Image (cartoon, rainbow, N blue to C red; front, side):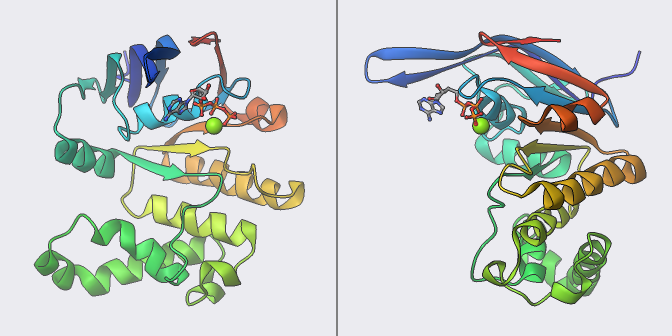
Length: 231
Ligand SMILES: Nc1ncnc2c1ncn2[C@@H]1O[C@H](COP(=O)(O)OP(=O)(O)OP(=O)(O)O)[C@@H](O)[C@H]1O
Ligand SMILES: [Mg+2]
C-alpha cells in the first residue's frame, strides 16, 4: 500500500473565545497520496482554512494527528515544525501574501533564504538565484523579475506566489482559494498552471475552492461538513 504523503487522523480543532469553546473540526480523516490532487469543498465557515493550517503545521490541533509520509508530527517544537513544513509543504493563498517592498525575484528567493544560515546562503547564492529565475520563467514571468507586487496583475502575483512555493521542492502544495480573487479568465490560467505543475513534478495538492468546475477536474473531491470530511 502506498504511504500517504499527507494524512489527518481524527483531527480536532476548537477555538476558545473567552469561556466558550467553539469546535470547528470534529474528527477529520483525510489521506493524500503522492501526486494526488484533492479538492476541498465546504460552506463558508466550515473550517477549510483551519484544516489547511493544521495540515501545513502552521497551527496545532486540539486532538488527533497530522502525518507526513506516515510519520506523526505531534509534539514537535515550533522550530522542528517549521523545518518539517519547509521541507514538505508549500502554500498558495487567496491574497498571495507577497512582501510589497520586494521584487518578484526577491519574494521567490525569500522562502529559501529564511531557512539557511548566512554562510550557507552566501555559498549557494548564485545557484539559488538561478533557480528562482528559472521558476519565474516557468510560470511565465521572465519579463517581470524586477517588478514589485503593486506593479503586477492579480494573476501575475499569484504566479509569483506559486514560484515561491516551488522553491523548496515540496511534496504537497496547500492552496487556499488560489483563484478566489481573480476573474474567471485569469483564474483559468492559474489553475492550468497548477495542473501542469502536478503533472510535471508529481507534487500533490490540496486545493480549497468554491468552484465546482475546478473541483471536478481534480482527482478527488472531499467536503467538510459538520466538522468532518465526507467524500
Ligand atoms: N483564530 C480564530 N479564533 C476563533 N475562531 C476562529 C478563528 N479562526 C477561525 N475561526 C472560526 O472557525 C470557523 C472556521 O473558519 P475557517 O476560516 O476555517 O472557515 P473556511 O471554511 O475557511 O471559510 P471560508 O470559505 O469563508 O474561507 C469559523 O466559524 C471561524 O469564525
Ligand atoms: Mg477559508
